[in-house]
Length: 302
Image (cartoon, rainbow, N blue to C red; front, side, top):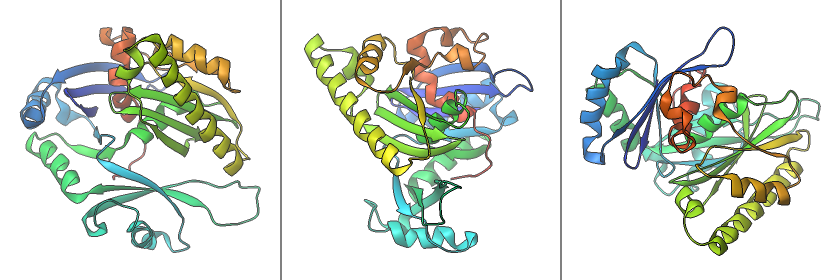
């Protein structure tokens, strides 16, 4: 069961991985709540959804953490986080002593000569992590994982991953856009785009066209950089996540990118037949990251 704290409430999904066939979304619901009511809302949800019976995940928002890339230190595994702390201390906008961190390895080409490689470091303020944990403890909801949107989107990309090829995915929400490239279950590229769904769906045609130009330029630069850095990975396609009426952006990207562009049709990769809300594309966008978090298999905690 995954809980995504949005600006106007909490999106909750319950995902069950079936032995055969696609993962099944057993439930998805949105509960309006302002920041002061999150605790009481979680307490109510624990009773209504029997959340204490599930393995539960919560997502950080885009502004709740920093994701930075560093050269992987050549140290033993149990010394990795200590070594990484020294490498990122000048890259954060808060003091390293106030940070909770985790690391994500970026695997290198197994056929290449041994050389240094990079890794992602996730850093969030201790106070924010403690507050999130406290909300769930008070509500008596067992919180197993605190995750980030990049990894949720990685999980969604895995559903469409092609053998020996990478998959790019582009999503938009109220916090902006997110581009990821994944390969064999690993996150290789993450880029934030400062354009929201509201901007893409409102305004005059001329404004939307300018936004489409900006997005295309950012994608071209990011994918070119990816090709240079990870030449051993061929990206097969760009998946455009649900975002309401995204047909105009899809057509624009298809006409201006060298990659095939496809819509990520939720029902093609997840069994959403039990959830009426997920039959609507706009609602799919609301629940997208929660669904990705609900697909998580790892046991690692941020």
